[in-house]
Amino acid sequence: MNLTLRIWRQSGPEDKGRMVTYQVDDVSPDMSFLEMLDVLNERLILAGEEPVAFDHDCREGICGMCGLMINGDAHGPQRGTTACQLHMRQFSDGDTIDIEPWRARAFPVIKDLVVNRNAFDKIIAAGGYITAPTGSAPEAHSVPVAKANADAAFESAACIGCGACVAACPNGSGMLFTAAKVTQLGLLPQGQPERHTRVIGMVDAHDEAGFGGCTNAGECTVVCPKGIPLTTIGRLNRDYLAATAKRGDTPGT
Amino acid sequence: MAVTGILLVLFLIAHMLGNLKVFAGDASFNHYAHWLREIGAPILPNVWFLWIMRVGLLVAVLGHIWAATVLALRARAARPVRYAHRKKVRGSYAARTMRWGGVIILLFVIYHILDLTTGTLNPVGDPSRPYANVVADFAPERWYVTLFYTLAIVALGFHLRHGVFSALRSLGQQTPRGEQRARAVALVFAVALCAGYLLVPFAVLTGLVS
Image 1 (cartoon, rainbow over the protein chains, first blue to last red):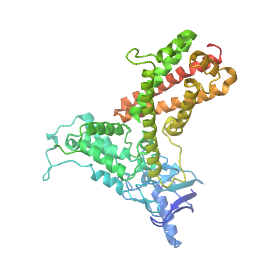
Image 2 (cartoon, helix red, strand yellow; image 1 turned 90 degrees about the vertical axis):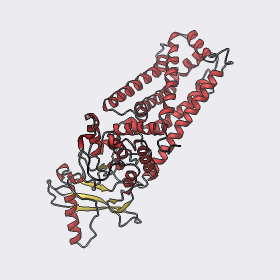
Image 3 (cartoon, rainbow over the protein chains, first blue to last red; image 1 turned 45 degrees about the vertical axis):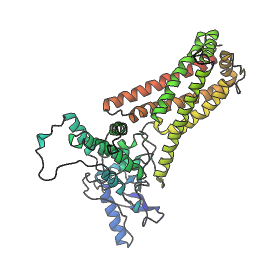
């Protein structure tokens, strides 16, 4: 396959950045999308040019590091797939492919296609934890969990924090990520003590980081490589209403 | 958004049911319109009830616009650099037309009040004869009024299709089956309300009501 790539190049956070066109020939349809970028980078290095910077780690679709806007689709055209698991057979010979970084104020570009996702860490630090006794692990069956809750919590726990939901959201909102964490911990008995402070803390951290507000447009769940459902946002809203009604954010008097 | 939206939806339902009185004839419709001014009498003096409703609706509308503006400004600020290649939103058409659809509805409401409440833009404009005002409004030679009315109602339908679902979600609708139900309810409600509102102008246009 011969492809034309239009890639966002930005030398650093202060650079203005621009789309640059590259020609990549002899691409195998069995290559992953990132392998195709590796091939481009090897050629750029041989030619003495700066290679394209992009995030990646496990290349197995479970770490959440890779994230590219491919032809306007977060993680590319295939549903439920991270960019590293996307194969070039999804494209045709002669295609022009636009590759851009996630676009959000909360995710500033570090270089080329690499963005800083520390904002997600701040949301996690604001409530994405449980109080657990230190020391040896407790007996797994000592705290029973209803099967339905365990399944729904596990579904949300599949979130890898890649940021595709923010990238695709017309409002630049990170609510699906936040809701996945709130759902995962809020459905389990171990997550109950912080249930109300968690939702308020995480939503506040989300808003402070500069993400937009959720309007239930539903773009996020379409591009989510882990298929986190939009219903998690309803769960977050319900917890938020309960938490504000019970003043879960203020210490007792 | 959800709470103010629900208040406005309750008004829309009552307003549509009142409109359908036009099929009960001239006297019945006028009687209904005059009764609106006297609800609550004698505890509430004349037109007081109506003014309480108007103030309540104005607060709901302003709250709705304020919340929408805050969301729109936040969305704009949240993505300072736009995508060079951006797919159209794949969610529903209704979800992506909420903002400019809302502006169309606002412009229509202003026109609608000047037309049928104050009578300024109405060819008859006689507050004592609302039935005559309506019939004159949607006369065949004033097709552009009917066209604008229809566009605004369709915009309202799309607004409600996403709005009703979104309001339920904002208030904590959280199960997958409930989501299907909420979407179905939103669609049926939007279509029913559109149909109810469009019956009147098209009945006048076709001579069913004259």
